[in-house]
Length: 153
Ligand SMILES: [Zn+2]
Ligand SMILES: [Zn+2]
Image 1 (cartoon, protein in one colour):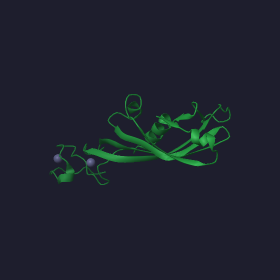
Image 2 (image 1 turned 45 degrees about the horizontal axis):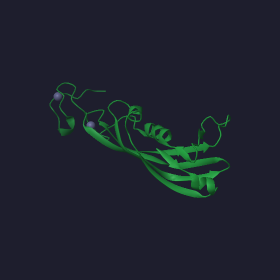
Image 3 (image 1 turned 30 degrees about the vertical axis):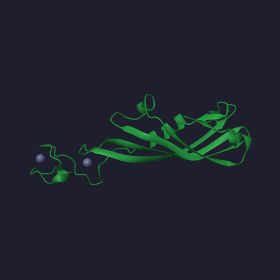
Image 4 (image 1 turned 180 degrees about the vertical axis):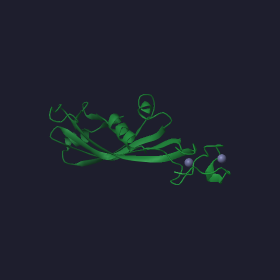
């Protein structure tokens, strides 16, 4: 998803708001671990130009769904992560992080999905105190005890 930043190049120092939505399919969907589905990716923020560069500051957000690590129930969790990018008209050997402007546009796809992948929870839980499944009979212990001794830790 590209963003036309020509206003920032015309008026350096002035902040302009942006709001974009991004498709999560193909290569972008493949950035997330197996079993994690991400929908509704978007980014909102501002960009400002100056001296052949454009700075983008915003947030990336999406909805991630997976299964609870303990009881396997479906879990949907909003994710949010910061987006901080510098785009330049020329490559800067001192700043390998710097991305290149494409004419008057910047491509935020990689920045947004890199942030979202970092913003994923380490593991999904349906709730903090999920009791999980009984290792003996597989019963959902959130619904009540099944009669088997809980494993001592
Ligand atoms: Zn659970
Ligand atoms: Zn049991």
